[in-house]
Length: 551
Image (cartoon, rainbow, N blue to C red; front, side, top):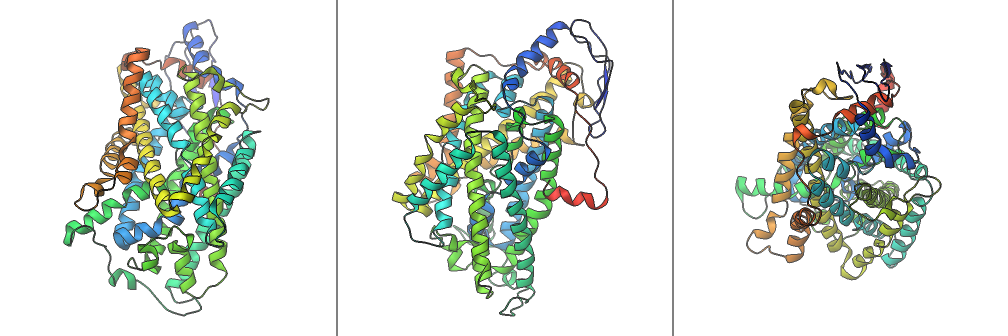
């Protein structure tokens, strides 16, 4: 990024910025001393954090977030619920919403790259009470150790040892990784992400070999299972309505599969060249979703029938993974163990991310004065250790899976996580809409954004509509006669009254006001873009573009 006529702190100057990949344009924007002071206030707390994440690490963290445990553990249940075509349609629908949400997120986060991004953004563009509510919902969500519980599900494929043993071991490992440098977290996630790429590519290749009859049993499947038992499953009622309800019921589990997709902006304050890094990582998520995710789901739909009892009646054991079942039945003996080992790293990665989300959300809340200032404390390496320690106190909740039945508790955690994700997606979309309203009210346009996606102005409304729709209907099955279960209702909908209850409390206690579009502080953000220039993004050529899958 090159800057002509850089602004002086105390003299108004007109500036223009040229960015190869982002085409940032700002014509005749006059900066004042007040803009500089506001920018300093907004980004002040980021200075005490260590920029330990480089482009390589942040790119892989984005990959790890896209391919969560749900793709490996929950996809079988999704297939059993909706059938092969129903499952694919569910992934396509949620994938489109994820893509729209990523566009919304990157455009806002590249303008305002701060740690605890979603909390800080909604406070800056909409209402401080929204930030309060979202922050504590995020903390509540992140301290629910669903992924740590999932590790015991995965390990139970190999042994009958009490799951509490492995929950303890993995819990200690996760705390250790998050207690020294953020670079440690990044390097561990890089390793996990590399294994995930190998696993997904391997599953696609092996699945294709199985489908074409190249496995030891030499059974050519083709589209056999699309014909018998059929492309769609039926749930609750028969006919087209039953097929639609089956498709819609699995949306929640698909949302869970995309659990860590918004993790990159959350770590903006700990990233070198945050604007260009967030832009590149978020944009490449779209490529990964379109290529790897949908290809893997399509192959899975070909090699396992949806009426297979092993996936239709999950036992809470990783042996119920549709991928493992397909490989076992093809006569390949060793591969299921390799798959399960890498799925274990996926669960550990997601549990690791949970601790990151909780600690950085607390940092964001403390930055807004909505949590004790102690959560702003960092160690000598710039890591917010107090938030990490607080979040770690709740890891023992994973022991609930030992007493209540692993499969059932994992299902509850999955619903809770999916609902909280949808709240976050809704807020990211609302941030984006508020940003565009502020640009219009103050006489700016999308050309003033440092990074943007063509057609991105429609991403916010699309993402908001579907995120709210998914949230309100995600637990609809409990309202069907004969399917009521309070635990399922609670896990699907508790987040809604929690969010608005926290919002109302903040309104009454802090007396916050809605930020009008004309009052949103945009100029300090533009000032920071100019005052902290970043090198232009290198355009990939030829075979270099294959790195979009992992870097």
